Image (cartoon, rainbow, N blue to C red; front, side, top):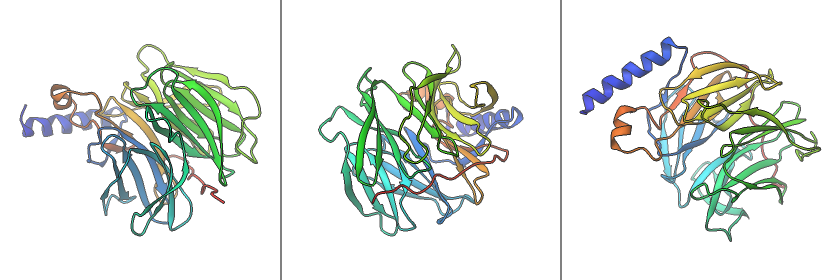
Amino acid sequence: MGIRDGEERTVARMEEARQAGGAEVFSGVACELGEGPHASPPLGRLFWFDILGRRLHEQGFDGGGARSHALPFMASAMATVDADRQLLAAEDGLYLREVADGRLTLHRPLEADRPDTRSNDARTHPSGAFWVSTIGRDAEPGRAAVYWYRAGELRRLYAGLTIPNAIAFSADGGTGYLADGGEGTIWRIPLDPATGLPSGDRRLFHRAGGDDGAPDGAVVDADGLLWNARYGAGRIDAFDGEGRRVRSVALPARQATCPAFAGADAGMLVATTAWQGMDAAARAAEPAAGMTFRLPFRVRGRFDPPVRIA
């Protein structure tokens, strides 16, 4: 298929998505494994990663000023520290990044002695604690874990997982969410709002059905809805507090990876995708794979708080 055919198919898929209440392109950069979108309100910009491509991308909320930065490692998620610094979750640790020049400094090792794993999903709890997961390089069953970090202290919360995702928190900090894409499950976890640590056992919140895809990244809005990317199903699903799916939004890329709130008032919902594992024929049939999208309606979103590093 030629370039013109691919462009025409992309336009057709975008029109189908719009007619179905779907998404529009926010960034046309096609990431092999787009992940970890993170909004910076002070900078008015969205940051996201191509994990396998070892790149950090950024773009203004208004769509302007796109930039791309090469990284010396695979990184997957970030948190804001302050106006000048960010905390990156990478394959061997947590790194501080200077916004002005991109300089990276190791802050805290994370499974640095495990060359068979890398970082995966992460999000900052309202208390300033940073939950971050690791995963086997080839998503081997049982190799993944989830950690809690705050003010220099690191604790392992869960182990023996396969594809830990959907780390997200309620606005009051009393509820957390965690998925294992390998099992197709999302759990709801009671938390101590002051620390972000579990205060009780996790309970099943949602189990994916046959055509639901795997639960990937997630965020919780100001109304308590959990917006979850469905890897393999090409959509973003919204669940209420009881685990009932109340809305689905189509993406023109099947491998949806993670949503995030963006815009000046967090009213925009964006989502990253991936073309990982697709051969040339599959990519030609799905030319929008790996792009980052925005949903064509407003939400009552929330920005992640700064992470506490000291």
